[in-house]
Length: 348
Ligand code: GLY
Image (cartoon, rainbow, N blue to C red; front, side, top):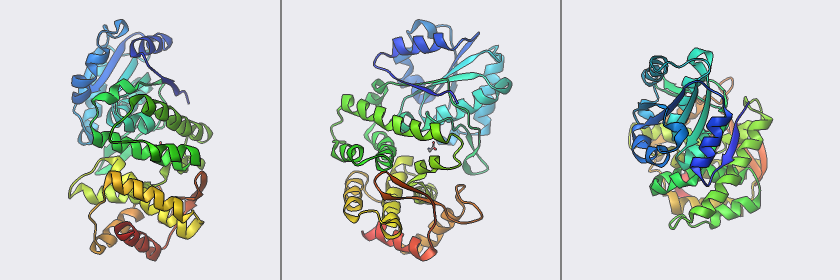
C-alpha cells in the first residue's frame, strides 16, 4: 500500500509538491460544507489547486451514504474524470473515508491524496487505507482497503477545531500511547488539553501517526497485529451505538470510555498494572466526563458487543494489554466479566 505521510508546516509548499509528484490529467478537490467554509480559504490560493474541480458534499456522518458516494462518482464523471485523474480529500474522517472509497472505485480506481483537517482524521482515519461508507444502518459496512498516495498532516487546520473535536482525536492518541510505550503515554497524560500548545500537539501527532503507520505496514489488512488499533473500540462501539438513539457523542468520547472498560478487563484478565489503569481512568474522567448508563442498559450494550464486526463465530473479540505496549489481540470475556467491566465503568 502507498500511504506516504508528510508532516507539513507549510501547506502551500507541501500540497504543491504532493500534487506534482502524483501524475494526473484532471484534479478534483473534495470537501464537505464545513471544510469548504473553514479550510478551503487556507488552500484556495495555492496555484496547483486553481484548476481543481470542486466537489462539495454534506457534512457529518449522516452524509456518509451511498447517495453521497453516487454524487461524488457523478461529479467525477461529469467533470471529465479519467482513470488518470487525482482527487484531494480535504476534511475529517467522513470526507477521507468516503472520498477514498469514491476514488478507489471510480473507473476501477484513481489515485488520491488525503489532507485531514480534524485531529481524529489526522491520527486515525486518513492513515492506513480503510475507506468506506455507512450502509443498511451499519457504520463503515461497505468499503475497501486502499491507501492514499500521500497523507499531509498540517496542524494549522486544528486551530479552527473546537475543544470537543480536539478531545475526540486525542482519545485515539491515548490509544496509540497505550499500545506503544510508557514514555509516549506519560507525555499524553501530562499534556494540558485546556490550553492547547499547537506546536507540542503537532509533535505528538507525528509520534502518534508513526505508531499507527508501523502497525499498518506490518499488517495492512488486519489479519493480526493491526487489531491492536481496536483497543477501546469493542466497548467504545457499543457505547456509540447505545448513544446514537439518545444523545450522540463524538467517536473519540466513546473510544475514551471504551478504554476505561478495556483497561479494567486488561487488569482482571491479562495482568495490566492497576496503578497505570487508575492514572488513565482519572485522566479520561477529568477530560471526557462519563456516559450516563445504568445497569438496565447492560443487556443492550452486551447485544451491541455481540454484533461487532470484529467478532468471529459470535465470540466477542477484545484487544487487551498485559502492560503499556504489551499487546494481547484476540481476547474474549464472559458475559459476567463484561457486566463487571460495566459496573467498574459506572463506579470505578
Ligand atoms: N481505526 C483503526 C484502523 O485503522 O485499523
